[in-house]
Amino acid sequence: MKLQRLREQVLEANLELVRRGLVLYTFGNASGISREEGLVVIKPSGVPYDQLKPEQIKEFNVTKDDNFNTYYPGHRIAMPPPLSDGKVTYVDGTKSTLDQQVRDVVQFLAWASEPHLEERNRTGIRVILFLLALAGLMYAVKRQVWADQH
Image (cartoon, rainbow, N blue to C red):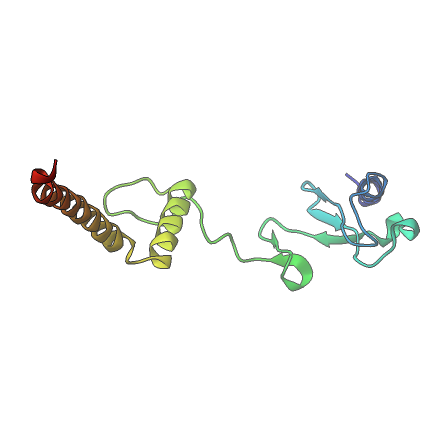
């Protein structure tokens, strides 16, 4: 896909956002990518939509080693994604897939946010059992005290 054609498509997509009422002032944009040519094009912020021309659409060359990153200057970074298949070796032989690594990270973050959760749950169960036993004992005492009144 030629750069000019890609810019025209992105311009049309941005104008469609305006027609559908999905943008406010100059906030919001659509971008396009040509993987064959390694190009990413995007509408620059702050340019009014009614003044936008295909030449104003900015392009970024992206190589196979680059990863697009919104927050990095130049929007390209060579750092690979932090998780990918085969990066972790599990002692128990679990297959090292991206899905498994994500589950492990989520589980760790849940534990790190509340490391005493299991202990609190065990304590809660003990308290509930104690209160049930106490309620039974109090009911038995009540029946004993008031038995001769009925």
